[in-house]
Length: 85
Length: 545
Image (cartoon, rainbow over the protein chains, first blue to last red):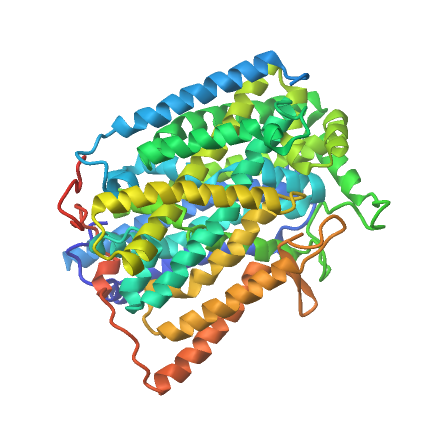
């Protein structure tokens, strides 16, 4: 992400609508599925001895890590392409 | 000191001494040419890479809140305490949106505090003052929470509890506090950064051992969850209501899904408005250091989820539950659990981990508050020509004053759920969201509109929090209240009020063409990634790579 010399972000977004949309969806989904409690405030299905509510929250951590890693990769491509142009 | 376990006590004292030594030695770590400069004392030379930043931010984020307050809430009320887990998930996608922008613009302009940015962005000293004041105020209950956490461990250790004299009773706390104050004074941000390594090692060790070992002693996870579910469904003889919830309920009042979600969202947005979290961020070397850390930091959150479950283990263990009930203090749940489950030497390691885990963030927070005061109040309004040496001297002293303020909070506010201390800080710090996060993306908001919205949010939030009462406390009893028939976190309702006022007034002020102040930042500076820090003063810049 060496953006010191790259053109302003706005043009990069316009040039790569798919990449930008990908980043936006990753982040938005991450927020939505953690915030919208009715999805996971339930007991079943259980995973081992863990009720759904509890294992859902545990599993969500590594999922967030991966989602943010993907978003960072996409963002780097956005920045690199911005420089290449 | 009658019922002190000698082994536990010795191990805690030895580890505490090791950490104290490290705290003083830290002044020599990555030694700068000139320590008497705020970039050095307050930001550790702005040269921390991914690794140190991870430890430093982790040291910031996982505190007595995590080890004492969250399990205490889980122990006392059940599932609502797991909002803290949802919160630490939400933090990362949310800061992914704005934190790299804040890092970039701060690096280009040499901003040390969030108030520096606000002053530069809106050309308004008043708004910067408001944000500095809010930051310092909000940090005090948060630091107080650390002290309450240390106190909980010391109480269970049996240290000092024999005397009825407040000062003698809390003497060990004052000693810990004094040591913290002195090494912060001497070493600045380097001390907590170095100690964070020791702290994290201890914490990972005892949490992982506890998570695998304790369930085997308690008949497995199915028994732990089963006991918790039964316990929280049973009716309290005092309130005639269930003791708690095993899942957030779909009702509109109580431990509801909305309350759960609003606490999680409010806390997540609040976290990186706190000056100490921003301090940790600005100490990073590169923009990519910040964004790469967002990938690794959720690892800490896994830990948090497991620690929250300690609350249920304490419910499932009859001895621990009885001990906590006898003491009437839910904060003691985790210390009692460890004391009962572990051999005394391992209890010592765990207790030392919790104490050090509270000292590190307390140090970082008081440094951040001191930076704010010095840069944005002292140098801005009282002594504009203050030299870097004078500023650093000032910061050192203020870091002591702030800790004393925190001590007052710790003594004065009710302790039923110490988590309220953190949530109260959240109510205040959230009022910076429109000007700080808003300002990173748009210059549309008018400075006077932001100031009015901030004032409204602060007044409403403080009054609302003051008015919450419970069976045991007449004021400051909780951080959620009922708005329009639904239980919701006060911080969130207050910042919504703040935002609405800011938007409406901006429209009016813009139509009236009221001067909006000069903006010293440029759009491309929000994505910049300069290698060197700019030179705010000639001495000691970028002293170490």
